[in-house]
Length: 172
Image (tube, rainbow, N blue to C red; front, side, top):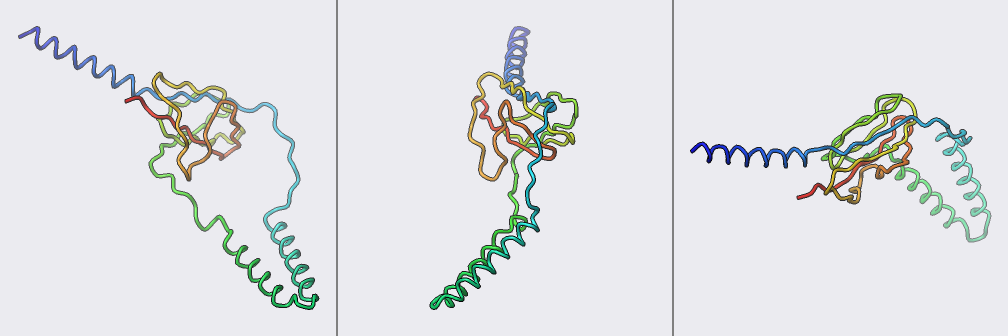
């Protein structure tokens, strides 16, 4: 009887160790970027909108002056307005349901443990670079599902408040 109980306990211990081994996380090590990129001057959103509006006005006037250009000018103007109204990306944002989240919150760098599908976000306030990803044996990389940020890889640089996705398949 004692042998049966001991064998059952040993079997449960072996199963729990296997489950514990599979529950190990993927370790993502990060460090601050020491050399920052030089800023590139660009137009703001409003500057780009005004430039686009000026281009539409010039196009409309040019087409209207052409002999047969009046109907085309109106259609082009309507098309430009439709594109401008429909291209605003702030109305709809992707849903990240089903993915865990991990934060790179230490300004000096560090290591975070993540699961098989995790969105890693940089909340440290400084640009961070992923310098190492340790994956337990048996895990295999998989494609990042649609709607999630791009895949994290060694060398990926994350600006403040940027994110990337860890996507692996656990062994069966």
